[in-house]
Length: 281
Image 1 (spheres, rainbow, N blue to C red):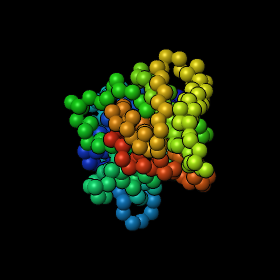
Image 2 (cartoon, helix red, strand yellow):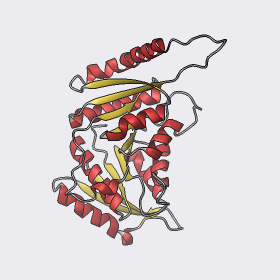
Image 3 (cartoon, helix red, strand yellow):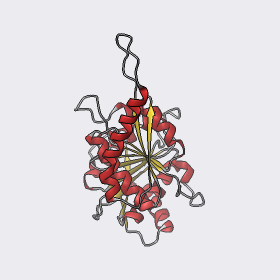
């Protein structure tokens, strides 16, 4: 996370999930010394412009945020335009954008709404998607504090953004970090036996080497390495089931260079129960 005074932006729509997202955004802003900007977007046809007359939703969320953290610097804004477009635009000057996985719109069977996916694919800063954010809409429900942070590390440049962000989050929270590397058995050819132990050992050594510079930079963060045979998304979802959050790059190794969001990141966003932090750079 950057240490400048760019704001943490949280998108609100008046739903319980958006109030839960506000609590996560307040926590992030306080821990990283950032101001908070509460943003509401009204999806109506017309110009993309600020709408001061429709400000009640953002103001109400800001009042609640001030009740939780009276000393936090908070501003509000309300815009006409699609919520995804508004927040992507605002992300250009933000340190972090926080949203609930689903707000008032969409289908209840969906784990993540279109706004979260649009941000994960196009934002110009890290994006925190808080799954089931309504769990934390009330201040009586404490935010998770001691669970580990899980990060996916496949050796790609995009994954390294996630590793860096995960170490910074773990240090700021004083929690351990679990780094996950998935590997898959190669296709058998000509009836040759595969030495699976050798592949696992190689994957473990590569993961340890990639994390070494970050362990040196963040020596107080306890780190556990998990090298798992199987597809990456199920491995991350399994390890991250009880995590404080899962941190990923926007895409990993493989796929097409012009993809904004990789299939593993999208699967984790679709199915995770924990908040997911996408390290857009």
